[in-house]
Image (cartoon, rainbow, N blue to C red; front, top):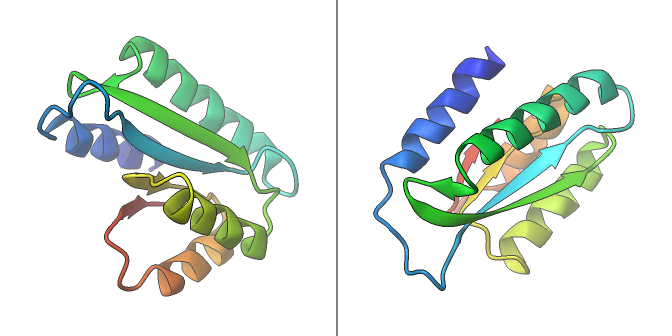
Length: 119
């Protein structure tokens, strides 16, 4: 299921018009590297890093920046991370977290935001 979701994200991003060279596409990735989902979080991180490497750090031919942060499986910490990605880092897309409790919290608080999210 995770492979399907990540493939869908890459497919969606591949159809984006090319961004200006100075404006990379920013993707925020919330990872469970520590905490109760550390094992699967590490596998997801490794999968993202492999895909980023294979794509040459680009999405649809446009330069991309991938921001990866561990939120330790904590729903409130995931929410703070997502807000930081949206407000400070000005991401274009957000993916993660693994745990449904954190994903549902994010979904409820993402209302009205103009960013795409995939969990």
